Each structure stands twice: as C-alpha cells, then as structure tokens.
Length: 247
Length: 267
Image (cartoon, rainbow over all chains, first blue to last red):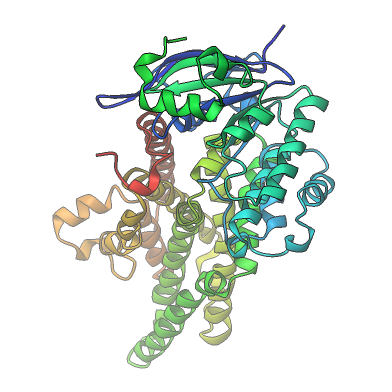
C-alpha cells in the first residue's frame, strides 16, 4: 500500500553539525505520527526538508509516491503545514491571507472553502481583522485554517497547540483526529506536550541528535522502557540518549 | 506555469496597497514631485531660448521615462520586500508555487503599480506642462519597452541580492537607479561623458533610449537597429538576472538560509 509519506535515509548537516542523520520513516494514510525530541534534535530541520524549503544533503522524500525533488510542485500541492514560527503575514486580514494561500495551493471554489475553514476554526469574528492584531492563539487557529485549505494528503504540524488554551487545544486535537480518520490523509505532528501526543498519535518517533532512537505506540513505549509515562521516557531520552538502543 | 498561483502574488499586492496609504502614496508621489520640479525648470529654460527649441520633450520627457524605469524596478523589489518584511518565505515557498511563477508575479505586480505612476506622471506632464507625446511618434513604444525590460532585470537582480545578503541589504537596492543615471545620459548626450563612462554606457540599455529620445526631439537621424541593440541587451540582462535569482534561491535552499532568513547569514 502506498504511504502518504516515505522518507529514506534523509540527512542534513550545517558545517560540522549533523542536524538530521540518515533517518527513514513513513506515515500511512489515516495515521497520526508524533515526531518527538528535545530542542535541537532535528525535528524542525526534518519538517523544513519535508516542506521543500531546505534541501537535504542525502536521501529522498516521497509524498503520495511523488518525489519531492523532481515533482516538487505536485508533491507540495498535496501537503500543507502550520508552525508557531511561521505566522501568516500580519499586514493582511484573515480572509485575505486565506484567499491568497487557497490560490497558491490550487484550491477549488476558493470563496466557499475559505468561508468553510473560517467557520470550522471559529474565525468568523476575525475574518476582516489583520492577522498581526490577533492573539497568538487566534493566529494559531488562522495557521491551522490555512493548513486545511487544500485538504492536504500530508499535514505537517509543528507544535500546533502551543499557544492555545486547554479547551481550544482539545477542540483542535479532536478536529485533527477527525480529519485523519475521515480522509485518507496522514499527519506528522511535533509537540512537547506528551499527554497530547499520547492522546492524538497512533505512533511516535523519538529523535535525538538527528537520529531516530525509538519508534512505537505512545501508550506502550513507556512501559517497554521501564518508565511510567511518555514524559518520563522523553526526559530519559533527552538526558541520556546513549542509554536507548537506536531504532 | 500556473497563472492562478502567479496572480496570487498580484492579488496579495493589491490587498496590501488598498489597505495602506504608505504603500499607495509612493506609487506616484515622488515621481509627481519630480515631474513638477522639472516641469517648472523646463519652463524657465524655455524662457531663455529664442530659437524656439522646446526643453519640455527633451528634459521632462526624459525624466518621465526615467521615472517609469525606476517604478518598474522598485515595483518588483517592493513586492519581494513584502515577503522579507513579513518573514513569509517559508509560508510562500512551501506552497506549490514555482520560482518562475513567483518572479512572474513580481513582474505583473510591478506592471500594475507602474501604470499608476506612469498615468499620474503623464497627466502632470501633458496637462500642466503641455508635453506632447506625439513628438516622439511611434518611437515612444520601443523607448518604454526597453526601459521596462531593463527595469525588470534590475528589479529581479536586486531581489536576488536581498535574498542572498538578508533584510538589511535592501539599502543597496534603493540607490541603484541613481548609480546608473550618470552613465545613461538621461539629461545629457553620452558624448558629454569621459571615455571610460561612455564605454560603460554602451552596456546599459537606457543609454540607447535617451540618445534616441534626444535624436527624435532634435529631428536627427537615429537608427532603429541601435535601439534594437538596447532591447537585446535588456533581454540578455533579464535572462541573466532570472538565472541569478534561481541560483541564489537554490543556494538558500541548500544552505538553510531560506528557513533562517532573519539571521542574514549562516556564519
């Protein structure tokens, strides 16, 4: 069965620093995969490569079977993302930003789809406000609305609930779970909130120093490594990565 | 080439301009001020000339065309700077947008904004200072075309420089027209320049335009082939500027500069 995302021996280094060290993984349809790891583990570098804004030194990325290197535009039309460090331009309104990105992603019925995501992410009251004046939580919702515009086959979420209050975060998690279940999409999700990861992800990949150290079911992994919770396991990997046998 | 994606860049610029006085005003304001300044100067100069020579088409027409070139160039860089100022590179380049579509979007936006500036300048020149564009005849079309092509080339080249050297390097881009102007003879014949400057001017397409403009006004002979050479040069510069932009972009993808653009360099 074709995977939504297939990453093979992906490597990226900056001068002497290896940020991502020959990692391989897949994301299946209807699957939510958590990409976990301490700061500087290589998560954002990996996501940047998947988004085509950073060229790997080695390795390949296939999105729905399309090679990102040779079929970049087609592959990216099936992808979308949101990340806390890439807010949409603050000098455009929510609606204007969404219209522009809907066009860029080749969305059909732009007006209809923009209105749909505005409603879905509870942005009706802010539709004509400039993104720059919104709170960080509201901006996060705008980013998520943008990420859903093209109903992506591969959705990349870099800490999507970081600025949200617990009630909104729960709502957003439910929406994304529903999205993965009801479509044929796969989701790659980074978060530092281990309770969230346990709740949302079908599978997690633990990244440290650019390598995947562990992979598995977030509910079963902690006990398999002698820890009570996923957070305990995360702390162990962050502090003592060498004690974990590489995946 | 997907036109919808290309037009999204144009629409974005339209949204930004319609909601911002500080973006709309410079589209015509400084060009209009220059037209008024040079308009009165030509009137003053005309009052000294008894032979009936009219400075309006020679000087005011040249200023109008030069500002058109500046509008085209800055039209491109302004649209590019919007992505720089709003730190939008990751958002925009993670979409299916191709570089050719992005650059085409910059050019189309620039055409739209330059037409506004050109219209205002023409209104001032024609209505207040009685400039007759018919003096230039059909030659006005190739004049505008050559400046348009060269404006695109310089705009794309300038954008590539800012992509390479970071947001602070936009300071290098604004004075480019001022650096070029002494060599291209906007207000004086190229023959006035010292030899070394004349050699430089041969490589600058606007030189052919302003030499041609003066020849038409003075009713001297001017070879169309010379102007064609200027157009060919401008086309070559567009190709070189585009290739330069693509090269810088590819390098930014490889080095990681695109995702860490605010750092300005990776050292």
